[in-house]
Image: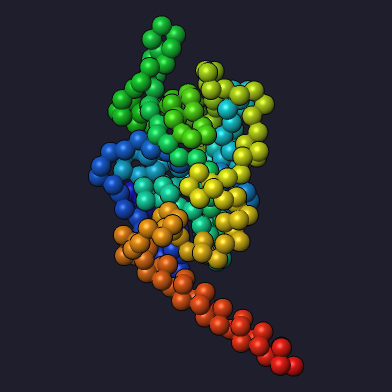
Length: 250
């Protein structure tokens, strides 16, 4: 069942992550999230078949075709995870800070080149390529652009779960020799660094986007989560002030 693994790994009464829901409307967006969990890594997600097909990329994608980035396929995520930026609380799966490092759209590329060049493909071709373990696509993001391929590794190492892929940049006008992803540590949504997100009390619960004073949150579950956070922070502030006053009197 779609998103069953996503649901199984999470306790939604504890984590503010969005509930599992398969979208009926087709879309071709992608997101790359920088995730400081047990180990720092990047989560690469492609919108396909009503969910986000997902891979954990330890070193992050590269714009240098010489780099072959290991990408571990993980459970599908709901499309509502697309603009997840904030903090997953401790004692929950994936606990840590999450930044939306890049967003954009993606386009499948036909597995059959025309005059030596890759041309746009179809959704059916994309699904077939993914099943065969050789998906070619084109990204149009704020940071990542151009043609890529993600290939499933055939050889299984001892202890392997069979979920190892390689994410590789193809040669085109967007390639960058010696590309260093660590040089770019800014959210495309909030313009904050990972450290700033981690230190922001307002990010202690999931938010679809920084509200910027835009008024009422649309999703009821999200509004409830933010309201609980505000109540918790207010109580902490009152306790801190009371403690400070006692120390001053002494």
